[in-house]
Length: 473
Image 1 (tube, rainbow, N blue to C red):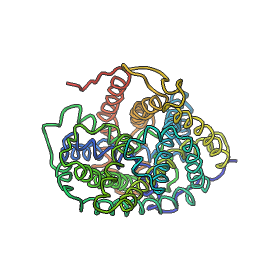
Image 2: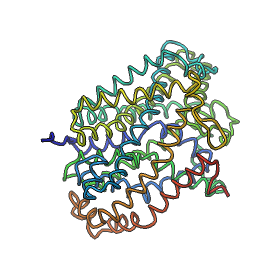
Image 3: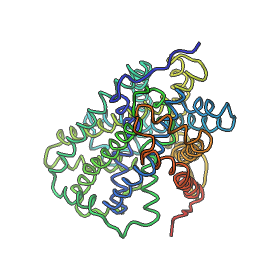
Image 4: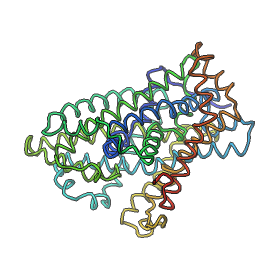
């Protein structure tokens, strides 16, 4: 007989855990730069509209699917499709995707951990003067990986209530406090408000089809849709939970963090270089974090000294580290839940299996930064050579996520049926049936949302693997 399903002990615990899965490195760095490059306030407006009119219904459907079945993606699809092998494959995508995303996310988290160690030891100048290329080939990173794995293991092995929920209740409030403190400090810098102005004032001329598609993609990826996380976390909530309201709070939290992060990153960039052209900033959040921002922090030594600059840099990277850990924990919980419910393993055994396998793949990803030629030049497509690390991101993060979202919409609307979804969402929300929210969710999930999400998938395939944009006109 299988063990009883674990559950979150409170509504706030669930919301903080779900928000922790959504709030990650992309919110804190990638989003502000994309907004600045693509119309500022206009991009923000498009992003917010996409979050609440396209992404929120998918979030609600994922949570409802999880609570109804009390299972992770594979079990959920199999349970409501009568054991269909085809839908079982769709569910497997929902487990394989977060497992592979955990591989590259672990690498990023290890780098952040390594940066904190170097800055604390007085090497901010090394990182600010081109040390990243040497840093990614350091053997000490494998020691840092042991530390990251230990932290993630400590949280996950404790379970849903005592591990994930307790960590979220500590890390998420700490993240908010640190973020607000960083914003307050950055806004005192010279020329900081030029960055605020650039971030908030709309530039409608930049709202091209490409930018609109980018805003939608950013919203989709930011909220962890298609990763199986919200299905899995939905299986840990009780029937007293109002799913639509909880999903709204998660979406609001994620959007608020992205917005506040913009008030931290862009003013800092403009303070460092008042003549900066945001259009020239790299699209890569990785490059911005690890190459550009250390230069900004080092520049602070003229006003607060080297030690002060190092303290601020440590504070920032600790903030990003907290966000990375909450996301990594959520990502890993999906395959952990799969091995527990579908394979009958204990939580500890499941975690050991996944940490070993994902750890090996993460080591391969780290070695693909110049340490092993085969992994560095793993394959070629779209006119360029791609490392093993690049392939993992391109395939599992950028490409398969929207495909998983499309499959979810089709499954909920035409296999499970919208009436059944409404029945589930009315539990804990007696006013749901007959409301405009119900009508909009049922209509949107069965009509234009799957078309839009499938369009993102097709455009991503064209861009990533054939260097062609369907919206490049």
